[in-house]
View 1: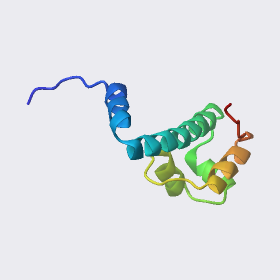
View 2 (view 1 turned 90 degrees about the vertical axis):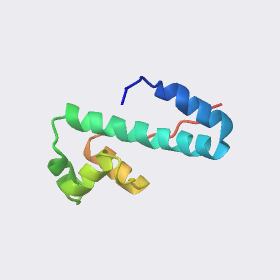
View 3 (view 1 turned 60 degrees about the horizontal axis):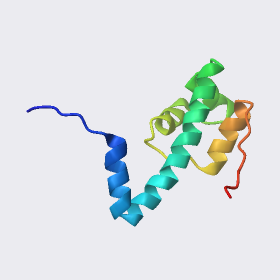
Length: 96
């Protein structure tokens, strides 16, 4: 079976252009993944393990791992508790 390169950004844009439901889901998930990505990066920069973060937020390492691997969606409460444990703040910014 031959392999070929796919431009994932182009494919997503095409799908968004023809499917408004997909576009809405994609836009909503990008925000969650971006915020989660920032929290993972911060955790690693601070040298905090998943187990240490879990202990700080009264959870367990398996839950942290599942969230970081996008196998489980975090609640807003979870994201806020992670940010607090990492010494960060989540702010809502209104777009004009």
